[in-house]
Image 1 (cartoon, rainbow, N blue to C red):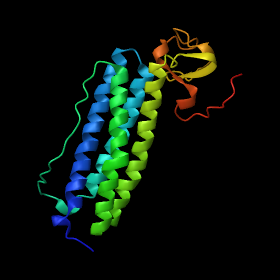
Image 2: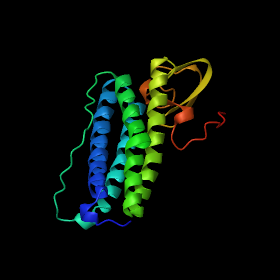
Image 3: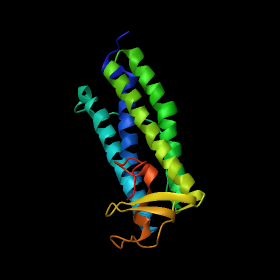
Length: 204
């Protein structure tokens, strides 16, 4: 049954989601700086890449609040404080937060919006949840590679891409310096998770 938007749970949920995505964007921007301090430039770029997608999510939720234009919406919600000095802890926190969003929070918000008759908002919650699932998997994969000391080194032959120049290195261990652009190894990322790349690409 349709509900008046001004009195709906969906209005508050959209504001909670907007606040959550906005904060996630800032957390990941801050985490990107931490990654750079650790000379993990590729991981820094992944945090920034994700932060920009969180901005897009926040914008979508903000657009759906158009009917509340000019109002101040009070919400009561909890948000994480992830100020870890460890890069793996930051990645673990990011994975946890993204998982919580896609498995719990946005499913509840989507179902409530559907019940109240706000199908566009429901669709946004469910679709964005699917993106957050990808974010969680990506953060988790990088965390595991770092924890297992397999980000820069494989037991057998592996492949990595330098995100500065695009050079693809194949071997068992990433060199300290990129053979092509001479940037340090923190610019390398395992080819399997490199952006815009077929992980099966051949190296001549």
